[in-house]
Amino acid sequence: MTDKRIRVFGGSAPILPLGRVCTSLRSHQARLLIMDVFFLQQMINGLTLGAVYGLIAIGYTMVYGIIGMINFAHGEVYMISAYLCAIGLALLSFFGLQSFPLLILGTLVFTIVVTGVYGWVIERIAYKPLRNSTRLAPLISAIGMSLILQNYAQISQGPRQQGIPTLLDGVFRLNFDGGVIQITYTKVFILVASLLGMAILTYIIQHTRLGRICRATQQDRKMASILGINTDRVISLVFVIGAAMAGLAGVLITMNYGTFDFYVGFIIGIKAFTAAVLGGIGSLPGAMLGGLLLGVAEAQFAGMVNSDYKDVFSFGLLVVILIFRPQGLLGRPMVAKV
Image (tube, rainbow, N blue to C red):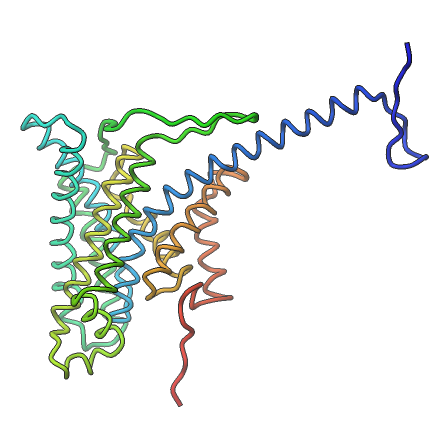
């Protein structure tokens, strides 16, 4: 019986049996296939998470585009929407609704309307009285409002973690040589609902009278006021729209994870702010792009490196963006007037 051997890396390298080389190559190919499947699975998870980040980032970027300030109470609006989602589901179930389309539609309408009211109240209390003051005063006011909402939720709903049951069962399975990619029906619904919400908002901003008024106020608030536009009403509407997007995100991410508490808005609010900065603060497409990129990057880091430090990675990414490209990917650089 002939002993087939192969010489690798030139004459000075050891001579290995051909069978061992083939086995090693097959093992290496199998590991590559497994890594590819894992990468694709994390990509899907990241897109789902990033779509939600994008929805919340829209609130930051719209408020900044209109009044040039950051609404740091926006993360707490998302937190309130998670509680409203649970309350809406409980009320609809109490009245006998069991169909998923009716449950989710009713919960979305209830949550979006109430969070819109929260956004309007935040603007009236924390921003409107300080509109002509220094830029630092509304920032401090927004941080104070954030703490008030946190303690309000903690006192009214309790400090313990709460949750909702799984609303949508089922999973799509894509079989590959290296494994199986699983896409739950909930993730599909989150992606579709997020993209639909972004598309509707983009159409409103780009092709409706309300959108033209918002863009005019963003470009020059004083000139828009001279031309007869009620800029105070526009600013209030922008807060309501941003809060509604946060409400949609709250329902979707609560469906995905199932649990929440009174502190959940802080971390995800900072991450959504990172997404807004990454895409270009003040740019609506930038907020969407930044959310998707941040979600994918965070999911890949959690899967490939360590999930314990994914929050550190997101905040580190924010620092790097602010240092090297403060205007973001789609934002315009600030030009100093001389």
